[in-house]
Amino acid sequence: MISLIQLLKEAVAEPKAIILAGAPGAGKGYILRGLDLAGLKILNVDDIYVPMLQKANVTLDLKNATPEERSEQAKQMAAANKQFKGDVEATIEGKESFILDGTGASYNQTAKLKNELEEAGYKVMMLYVYTDLERSLSQNQSRFTKSGGEDRSLAPAIVMSTWKSVTQNLPKYADLFGDNFVAVANTLEGQRIEDIDKIIDKYLKPFTPTGTKPKTPAQQKRSDEKKAQDREEIQAMLSDDFIYDVIEYTMSKEEAQMRVAQFLRS
Image (cartoon, rainbow, N blue to C red):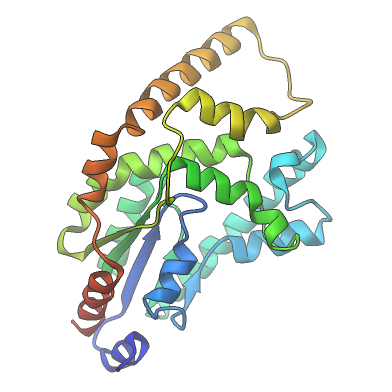
C-alpha cells in the first residue's frame, strides 16, 4: 500500500496544506495517525507553548492554576503565538506542505488563512474532527494525569467555549472548503449527559478559578447574560436532532483516508 506521505512526495507541482480543526480532546492526533499522515510536517502552537510553560516552571494542569500561574500562562501564550506565526510564515514562504493542527474556533481567522495560502500557491483542505461536548471535557480533565504531567489540561470553561465555537463552525467550513472538506466523528460510546447544567456541575464547577478580580455590577450582569445565552445555545446543541445533523457531515475514517489521498495526489 502506498502511504499518503509517498503520494505527497510524488505530487511536487504545488504545495498542500491541511488545516486540522476540532475541539480540545476531540482526538485529532489519533485521527491523524489513523490516516497515515503523522509523517507530514505538523505545526502546532502547543509544541512551542508547553516547553515555554515548563521552562517558566508553570503547571501544565491549567484547570487548577493559581491566579499568578494564570497570569504567567497568558504571558507565555502571547510569546508562543508570536513565534508560531513566524514558523507558519517561514513554512509558507518555503512552499513546504504541512498540517496546521489547531481548533478552528475562529472562522474568520481560518478563512483568512485559507485565502492567504491559496494566494501563495497552495491547495488547501480541512480535516475536521467532531466530538461531543462531554468527551471533550472528559478527555481534557484526565489529560494531565494520563500523560504523567507532560501534557496540559485547559480550564474546562475554555474547553466548553471552544467546543461551542468549533461545532457551530462545522457547516460554515463545509461551505468554505467545498470538495476539500473532510469530517470524521470521534465520540463517546454509551450513554452521554444531555443536560447542560449537569455537565457544568460535573466538569466545570469543581475547577472554578479562584482569586479572580471582582467584577463591577455592570460587568457581572454582562457575564451572567453571556453565560445564560451560552447555556441555552449549548443545550440545543446537545439534542439528538442537532447531533444527527452534525453526523450527516461526517464520513468513515476509511473514506476520509481515500479523500485525503486524492487531495494529495491532485
